[in-house]
Amino acid sequence: MENKHILSSFDDDLKKLNDNLLKLGNGALTNFDSCIDNFGTQDIGEIDKVINGDIILDELDDKVQKLGFEIIALRAPQAADLRRIIVALKIATIFERIGDYSRNISNRTKLLVELNYSDLPGVNIGKMGQKTITMIEDVIDSYVNEDDKLAVKVRNSDVKIDKMHTQYYLEIVASMQRNKKLAPTGAHLLFIAKNIERVADYVTDIAEQVYFLVNGTVLSDHRPKADESSLIIPEKELKNEN
Amino acid sequence: MENIKEDFKNLDLTVGDVFSKDARLKARNVNVFYGSNKAIDNVTIDIGNKEVISLIGPSGCGKSTFLRCFNRMNDTIDSCRIEGKITLDNENIYNEKIDVVPLRARIGMVFQKPNPFPKSIYDNVAYGPRIHGLSENKEHLDNIVEESLKRAGLWEEVNDRLLSPGTGLSGGQQQRLCIARAIAVSPEVILMDEPCSALDPIATAKIEELIHELGNEYSIVIVTHSMQQAARVSKRTAYFHLGKLIEVGKTKEIFTRPRHNQTEAYISGKIG
Image 1 (cartoon, rainbow over the protein chains, first blue to last red):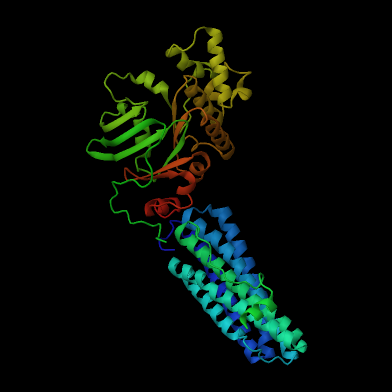
Image 2: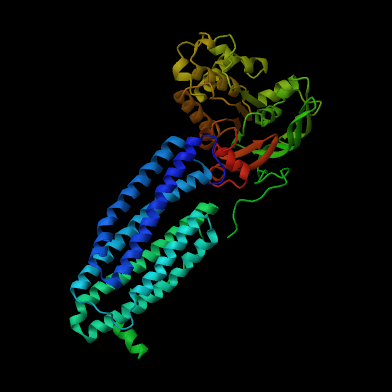
């Protein structure tokens, strides 16, 4: 937002919108970071903080939607201003969804603690989570600095998360097949891995919005994808690997 | 992947496509001077057939001066001098042999403030066809008046009081009467200089709807200070600044992703 508007109250409105959006984005990042951290530490008090704190993200999303709607109605924004508001409305909803996934991961982590969860071979939720946290940090940076190159880099990095998800999916199913008692744990782990994979997908949506904000055009090429978990039968894949 | 914000240091270069495949009016390297003051600086643009184009820009940018070049309204200003070339259907309108009276029938004009003649509603519309000898008889003239008032969306409101003074109508009705007067002489182009700036929102909406309909028959060039009006009524928009034509483009592109920083700043309310 380099040049100031003649009408300073318009700048005030845009700043308010942006401040709340960044609060929401940083809140979503903090909650996701915590839920990954808590998966390792299994600290129930910290897990509950994420679960109970999600409502703050919901409220911030509502605030951004209301502010954006009012600015469109009262200011009739044009060009970059219009793009900024449309993008803010879209990515606020995405950040709110990331918060929902963090809460869901936290709920499942609580159950895993009850199930006396210990690591399954070949599955590293912490590593997958950390890579996704970096993606969220970078996408927020790309928005703040209007850095479309960084946004494209973030978008293309999702393929690593997809590959990890496919791999973990196979490993978790294999563990469940080896030891049926691990089925409840495995089921929750499958959902947690899938939730992280979806969060990374959402980050790519934000990256695409940042590109649109900066350039006024949508990224024309198709996003690289590598999550094959919905396309393969684990037994076959495992046999092929062996 | 490159940023669309280009650094246009050479402001003589208009951004966007100034040309039109089916141009009726062509302005080429037009300069306008008021005494020694250059009001229009090397402007080149086409106005397409049956095209509604908006000219926008801050006060004093030259958009109205440029509009008035199209029907030689600037001829009435002694200190005004025009260079370059403007053609209507490839005929130079500044040729010495051109008679401005029939030219102004072919290129009609509607002004900011409604200016009906102090005559009846009927005579306001009939005036042009009479002086240009366009009517064969009274019945024909009646038809022209009725048809023009209908096309201007005014017939239903005035058909029972055609002999009442035009000045007795509301502002919005007077402006539509002026549009009826302009179209009564079968123009090819209609120039509008801020036609709604003195009207309320309802009267404005009626004029805008009329512009939309008339755009199917005429080329319309409209100067407006209202960004929203330009966005609503025109298919193409031209942005002027300090006498230069900065950018021309499809209206939907100008208002969503203008290419020139100055256009962006103006439509976003960052320069006045």
